[in-house]
Length: 303
Image (cartoon, rainbow, N blue to C red):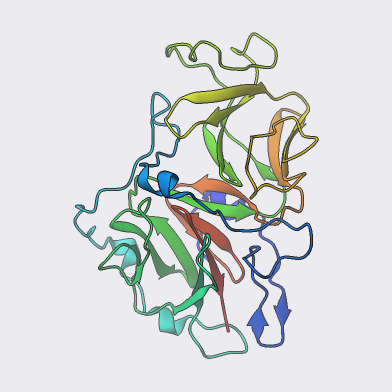
């Protein structure tokens, strides 16, 4: 197993549920939801399709807008850590088949299954091994490779990052980025000497300087709201402390952040579509892991 002391390797993962020879889908997809379940789809009007979407994130110094990733980057050089044996050599204990990825696209129908091959499996746009039709995906967005017997997922310096699904308590740090439903939230514990939030930004309580807080990032890069985090704060569609408007991908009670001693933890509350944390560098992925690249959900499986 990799031994890189990466905090993201400590992300708790959900156990893989299997029925026969197939793996239960990790997300609610159109036509598969039960009554009153959350639907993993997003209908958009022609006007919305024509409008350029911008996602939000935290930059090094400020809250920078996310935009469609340009398709101009050169293929990153292979480092010594990625000069690894073929992924075909990585087998599950009782099977000789290669691992594979299921691609779940919002509103895109059944998931696509792609076998992971070679010593370096690239995820990105047109020329990648797994080409995603997603304008928030960089040309060379991520790679999968073997390191010390483990299957590794690594961000290749993409603009919009990689988010891994959290199944249980995960210790948060300053500037951690979270996705729930269609919302991007930033956890802050420190105060920047940056310009104040725009006038009229809703805020619960004050001052914010020494208070851990959640920042709701809007599509245009502005701050939508700032929520102080006390002993516990919940996020969801109904009866929660943070209730973003018109987000059908949120469960009624989706996720929570709670304090234990001096540490804050992110916890998924059994949501249908999951809670995701942005990961940096290379992280090991195991059977059943789910992650997000752009607006696309992916899951790792062994046959």
